[in-house]
Every structure is written in C-alpha cells, then in structure tokens.
Length: 109
Image (cartoon, rainbow, N blue to C red; front, top):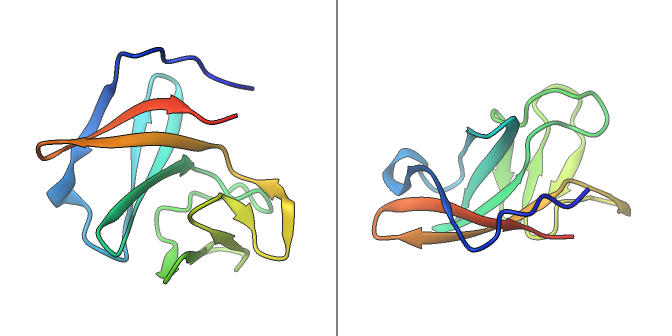
C-alpha cells in the first residue's frame, strides 16, 4: 500500500547518527523505517525481514547488499528486493538530506 506523504518531508534523524555500512531504525508515524548508510548514500526501507519479521537494524551491509541478522536473508539496499527473488521486496522510501538531517519525502510504489 502506498503511503502518501505529499510534499512535506518528515525529519527522522541526523546524518551523523548513521555511519557508512550501518543502519538505524526511525519511527515515521506508525511505521518503522530502516535508514541504511551505503558508502555515504542514505537509503530508506521498511524495517522488518520478509522471512522472519525481525528488525533489520542489525543487518550486515556489504556493498549494496544487507543480510538479516536473524535468518540470513539478503536484500538489495537499492531496490529493497530479496536477493534471488525480485518479486519479494521491502517498501522503499524517497529520502533527501537537508543540511545534516535525513528526511523522508515519499514512499515508492
């Protein structure tokens, strides 16, 4: 389901809170959003492994892939797709950096 945020961005966290290769969960209304710093570029995905429902906050990030810390399922950070099954994917959010703040603008379809 597409969540309409309109043009009003929602500030989640400061950029300095997520070092490269790491992730952090932020709350957006009633949704947990996983913010991943992939080589200095921030990506936002729905938090929760499709296979085991665990938070992906402790995911290992390797290049453009991250791995669920509980079950080991791998995801493409760029698309949110499960590695090996592109039909299964996490919702992805549009983000922007405003000075030092990470903001979510919209959820992709």
